[in-house]
Image (cartoon, rainbow, N blue to C red; front, side, top):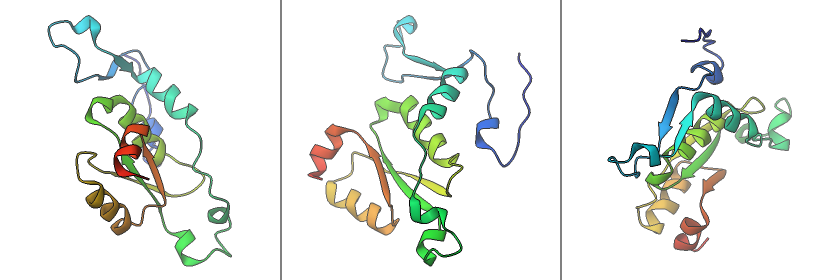
Length: 140
């Protein structure tokens, strides 16, 4: 197994960069493991690196920014359970943001649209990651 060094200040260093399985699709048929969609640690790193940065212009001007722009940037993550690997990529990408301090807030897509909107409001989310299907359900 490959050696790796963990840096407490860098989430990307918390897991290895190799071909071991990091996640598999939990909805795949258990009898046919070859049909499972698998995401390796190496692929996980690649996908996190390919995510666009959370680059909020006013948040980069900390000294002159209003108080609300110096606080964490909460991002609601509303993805179906069948997208576990994608959820991991999004959560790690949000938490490993190096341009601003982000916080990921996973929200259950099975809640009613009213409850989802209420959660987003209470958490003061300023960003949302979801699917087109969930957006249509919520009438965004």
